[in-house]
Amino acid sequence: MTPAVLRMRGVRKTFGVVVALDGVDLDVAAGEVHGLIGENGAGKSTLMKVLSGAHRPDGGAIELAGISFRPAGPADARRRGVAMIYQELNLAPHLTVEENVMLGRERRCCGVVRRREMRADVRRALDVLRHPEISPRARVADLGPGPRQLVEIARALVGDVRVLVLDEPTSSLSRRDSEQLFAVVRRLRDRGVAIVYISHFLEEVKQVGDRFTVLRDGRSVGSGEVASTPVSALIQLMVGRDIAEVFPRVPHVPGEVVLRVDSLAGELLPRSAGFELRRGEILGIAGLVGAGRTELVRALFGLDPVRRGEVTVARVRAARATPARRLAQGLGMLSEDRREEGLALGLSIAANATLSRLGPFGRGGWLSRRRQGAAAAEWLARLDIRARDPWQPAAELSGGSQQKVALARLLHHDVDVLLLDEPTRGIDVASKVAVYRLIGELAARGKAILMVSSYLPELRGVCDRIAVMHRGVLGAARPAAARTESEILDEATRGARG
Image (cartoon, rainbow, N blue to C red):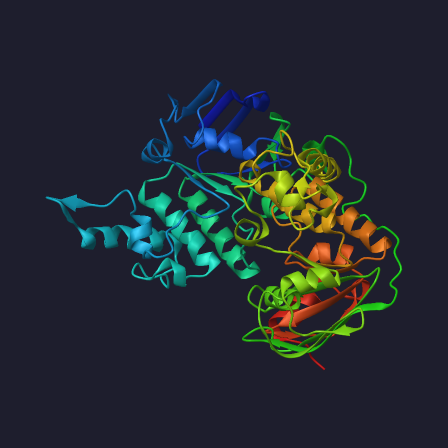
């Protein structure tokens, strides 16, 4: 193996009484993609924040190319060749690609910005990525998720990166954008860049990774060659036990129709959607990013305007309604965008989990924080949300734990119809299994579940029926057992045939 360009030994980090890192070791060689995997709260992001200068370690040693490495902050780490690209991109949407790439590295002479030289630097970085369609003068707000990800990588390349950390880089990307990103990762690896790849999608780690390290409870518990290690072994290292079923099936029987949608159309998307959803049923919606799946869910919940069509909830017709009315009718929605829509990050876990239904905690016009906290603590335990206590700010949680807090609010409200938009995005394997089991249990209790997902194995493994959306038009729902992934992809790209 090529000698390690990055060597971390016995790295420790605590936050108060919480031990986030308890003596972690990690070696990454130049010209390799190293998968860093583990459950939410295992310490992956904390370890990389220590590496990138965002956190100061409490103990241990780090070497970069054989020299002691202890950055004073993220800017210092970048100057020395370590760049981290977070799951939530750190770009200024109102600025151009060029301005974002060179932000903090502007070339100046006598107080004048040397834009021609800067544009040449940006162009060279984009040429390495082989995406000439991204113009340095384009506004970032006008780019899609895939190109924005590449702009972040271009920022790292301008700084002559040695170690590039990618934290859940495909969580918001379409399959096509993900494949383009994988190609870029391989090209950077071939240029000698050491890449640390954090992902909950083990299939991705198998696809692009060379070696891996598994963290569990703040410790490194295993490492090895990706190609020779089966996914089942990776999962066992992550959770410390065997998981017999990745998609546990809880017996449930569909009952009466509780939600009927006829020829529903929004202002732009969806163009036409119709289906029936029964109590005790899990209906999956597949499709490419931009096909109109999220717009369908938002229109059903009253967040987006409806242009035409009918929506019947429990035999009551109401195509146009506010979210408050939908909640009163028994519909609840889990947004795919937890940071902007799903959570109030400045508030506590308890507030986020219970805010939509405070009645059980009120008495004489006063709110009982004790009862509110106790209810939130139950959800923390049930969904395995790792937090200090129910009053910890939601902003301090990992992305996966934030997603579970948003799901807890929906469950606390006890709605009859759950509209779930990418419910397992950013959640680790063990937590996904817990969510799949919970969805099955809800269906067994007579809840009706509409589930949008870009991850085809979970649609086929969890849902009873699957409908595919293509360019705003929803196809007929068919039994999940009768659908193959290739067939679903074919319908998503070319539309229903015959």
